[in-house]
Length: 213
Image (cartoon, rainbow, N blue to C red):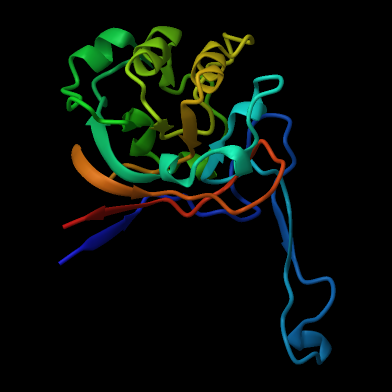
């Protein structure tokens, strides 16, 4: 019997966001039961990269494909969760060489020590485990469709050129950020991370799930 594992982080006004972004706001400015209306009608004000979300190429690549232009099967299908919790600073090409990636695997989720805490309700941590450019090149060289990381972003604040984003998105390797892999064992799953069907945008939210038999 199939089991579904929710790897999304909770999103509300407390959710940690990228430095400089406004915090998410959820409100009921119009209809609400408290005002005597027959329904509650909520509004969300916040960035497309808040909470668990995906990055499309146009997020960083001038002239790159926007979210609606990417095939749906990039976000859905077989994936492999790699246990990289032993990495002390970053994920490198060497990390991936040793991680036991299955031949032909096209979607990779990186479980690091970032997942050991509720980072989504803690102050921004500039010392998070990030993806080095060498690891990004390792992925694009093997035709990986998607990579996921358990933090708000994949590039460190010491790399203002965003080399991992540029390498991955420049080769249409999509990115899934802000996932929680704390209770997920390394192994192969089915990933269900199709984003909201927004048109003409650089990214969007998703309720990311793993399915295992």
